[in-house]
Length: 348
Image (cartoon, rainbow, N blue to C red; front, side, top):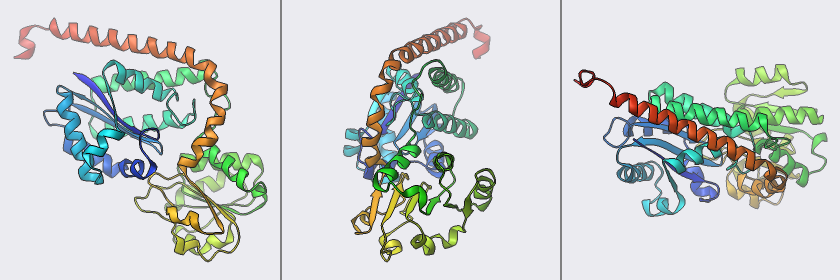
């Protein structure tokens, strides 16, 4: 059974296309429920982050499976299959295993060594496993890549001082507004990026933090653990943008949550950090005279400043990856031999 990865990431696709292929749980459910159980897809895991979407699957007919997956992505996103063929990268078998292990170790992230990708891989695998989309093969592969990702971070300095995307967003705010710690700031959302931003901002001494989220119970919990944070109802948040100098948003939404009509009346300088994929802020908001809009694409330049300091740790991480892939091959070989040794009655 061939393992295949179809990958679309920030290096191969512009953000306008990257946000279209981004998968929420409903999208994942659609792919899994319509592709699995056919002749061409046996197991599948989907990983979707602000920088990439990865379809990992096993198939007895990889070439046909990729063609079908392209058609399925086209049907869901409207992106022509001819364009998909130019923005996707395909990995098969050994290259697929290496790609996934490098991904888990943070070697393919916008910020080398960042830790968020490992959490996102765990979440993607857990969701697909609970759906019933994985069995022995992909479960073993994902156990290996997650374990290797942990090993890389505990036994090397690949993540030492590493910026996550959320913390890079804070660096971007500082560049545009050095006085931001003394001014009111609104964070919208409650996911991992927002949580990490809150922890960092609190540690930096920001005392004018406000948060809003669709689910109030989640932000109430955050407010209990982080001092000096105010909570406002999500339903009223658009009417309160004028009270803030910085907006920091990372929510799951297929449509922009903030549009020009929501902030066009604001006459003071406003910095907006949009970490959403799909984008949470309409791009034309950046044309407003009072607004500085920073999205995921703009954060890449900031992240490049941290890459050089971690390059010395890439070589030992690659050795961990080599060992992990060798172990997977031994496991697969043993499993194949064991099947061949089963009595014929086992297959009757």
